[in-house]
Structures are given as structure tokens and as C-alpha cells.
Length: 193
Length: 214
Image (cartoon, rainbow over all chains, first blue to last red; front, side, top):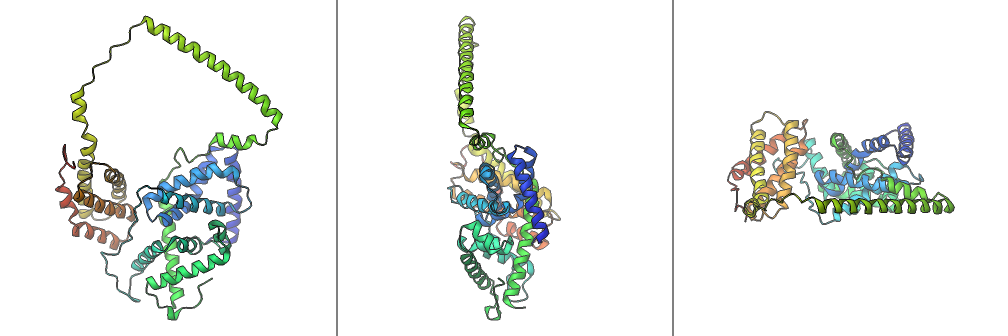
């Protein structure tokens, strides 16, 4: 996760680039794309469950971003606004009747034994698949909070839900993940929130 | 370590892996022509800031320019028409109907052959190559596109072929996602999948050519 100083620098940089894009600077639009395409790809990949489709969705998101940029008022950080556009565009994108293939982060060819002796790689793949299997209402808050490092306030802003709902959904998602990975809940503490 | 700490650690691992993967993929992504600022939209939003009187004056100028352009176009069209009536048009070659008929099945069966040959060659390279390479990844991505096009095409109506193509697609996705710095265990698992599904042998047995898949 980025530090506070870095976040401030990033926000300043974003504001400068957005102003340049709105002034018609082509180089700035490329810079904006290069700067945020990885984040948009991660969101698209987690929403769609398909890396190839996610690449298409990245383009869709930036089409939308450049369409809507004149309406960005700067009330929130640019990245919060971008998360909101990315999530909405990707959800609409996967609802369209195009072929959607879930990428199976399959572990069928590997031995998955339960317990502490499982390899970290296998556990990571199993967790990644378990996240993809969560229902979207739980998956998106978890992805934004736990993987993207947003605060509950930012998650709430990006998804159009309350902060309380964000906390509850992340907590519920974590419980499902613990259960999917067979991590013993009796040893559990708080949800790290 | 309690279950929450283990989950946190694993989530950090997933986040780190996702970041590395997304940065690798985003490096080769370029904004397509649609994903650029639309000057007309920018202008339309900017026009709201222009005073109404100025907008009206602008409209008058635009209308005048439009009328001038229309007059020029009509003049050009009349000129071309009168020139055309004096010069005989070049002879149009007769349409080779037989040739068109022969070519018609091409789009249906050519990709099957293409996917079969390129797929076999790629899977043999993966089976026999010492490590996973960036070249394999690039070839898998290219072939993935052709395979998906074929899956969406009417040629792929044979259910057996469809099943094979879907399996091939799945393997190609894995190969494309492994990346050059893939874990050797993942590479081995992918190779084992290719072997256990007999993908190479089944691809060999695909019949392509006119009539295949009809």
C-alpha cells in the first residue's frame, strides 16, 4: 500500500495530468492510461474472472473515462472516481451478451492437501480462485479493500454503498474465504479492520 | 499464527501477485483509438461556458459556411456527371461465379486448419521445450484469438470439435497467463494437462478442408 506522502504526490500528479488531458494534450492522455491501466486491469480481471476479457474491459473503461472526464469535478480523489468508473463499466461489460469465460485458476493437476503443509503457491492460487467464486456483492468490496488497499470510505464511494455495508461485506467475504481455504475459524480474532 | 493473520498474509500475497501481473500485462497495452479524449465531447462541454450571443453569432457563420460547402459539392457533382457522360466507363470484369463458390467455404474451414497446425506446433514446443518462454506466451495469445474466433464461428458445429477447441482455449489461457517467470510447478502442471487430455493427438485427428465441420 502506498504511504501518505506518495498518495499526496499521486493525487497531485493525477490532477496535473487530468488538467492537461482536458486541455487537449495527447501525451497526457497516454500518461493517464499508462499510470492507471494496471489498476483498471486488476479490477477488470476480478470483476470478469477472465484476463483476456479484462484487457478488452480496460479499453472500455478508458473510453468511458475520457468521455466522462469533463464531468469530473475533483470533489474526490481521481483514483476514487476512476475505481467507480472501472467497477461500473466492468460490471456492465460482463453483463453484455458476449462470450464470458471464467479462467479457472485450476489446481486439478496438483495435489491439494489440507493443512499447514500446503505450498504457499497452491494456497495463493486457491485463495485467488475462492475470491473469484465469491458473489460480486462481497467480492468487489473485498477486492477494493483487501487487494487494492482502499479505505472503507473509499470502497463505499466507489461502489455506492455505506461504509457500514462495506465493513459488513468485507467481513462476510473473509469468513467465506477462511471457510473455503479451511483455515480454522476457532483460532480467529478480529477481521483486521 | 491465527486464521485471520494467515488470511491477511495470503491476501497480501495475492495482491502482490496481482500487481506484478497487471503491471506486466499493462506494459504491452496501448489505448485503442476509442480510448482517447473525444474532442467533440470536450468542445460540447466547453460550449456551455460561451455566452449565448456569441453562440448565436457562431451559428450564423457556421450556417454560411455550410451553404458554401453545399454549393461547391453540387458543382463538383455536376462536373463529374457531365465528364462521365462523354467518357465511356471502363469495362467491368464478369463475376467469376464458380470462383466465388469455390472460395465460399474457405472462411469456414481455413481457421480450423490454422488452429490445428499452430496449436499442435505450440503444444509440442511446450511439451518438449526446457522452460516456459515469452515466445510461447505470445504464440498462445495469438492462437487464443484464432481459437475464440473459431469457437464463435458456424464451422465449429461438431460437438467433439467444440469440446476440443474449448479445452485448447483453456490451455492457451493458462499458457498466456503463466508468463516468462512462471513457477516451474505451474509449467509442469500445464504440461501434464496437455498430456493427460491427449490434446496433441486429438488436434492431429481434426479433419479440416472443405466439408469439415459441416
